[in-house]
View 1 (cartoon, rainbow, N blue to C red):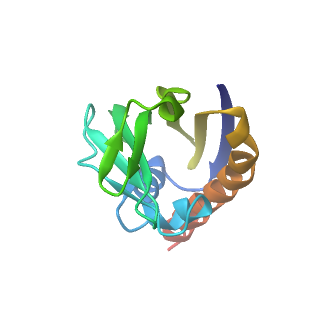
View 2: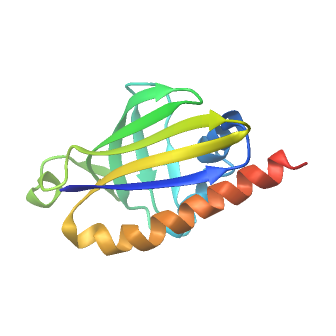
Length: 149
């Protein structure tokens, strides 16, 4: 597995950027770059389970490894989710189980830099290289449009 890194500068305070990343209203908007109709089910507390589910009902079972509001969020991906069933054991899951995804926000002079790290298998790399920059541009436009009001 390899870790891919992305970052983007957003002209908005990090509290607004954080809200756009993780609110129920805006999470499906920016994650549509990966899969239209994506959603997350969780209480968003550190140590809690989180389900990342696509429109077709399939997705990932993960845990919120760290949640430091407005600063840092990390997810550890544990397995797949399909038709209401969690798979944490199959061989296809074991090749990527334990993959991490991190989001770090740093604010300076009313500009927030969002840093993302995501572990991926070689076969998922080209998809991530296309989808992640597009997703972050959406986060930027959501946050900047709110901040400019």
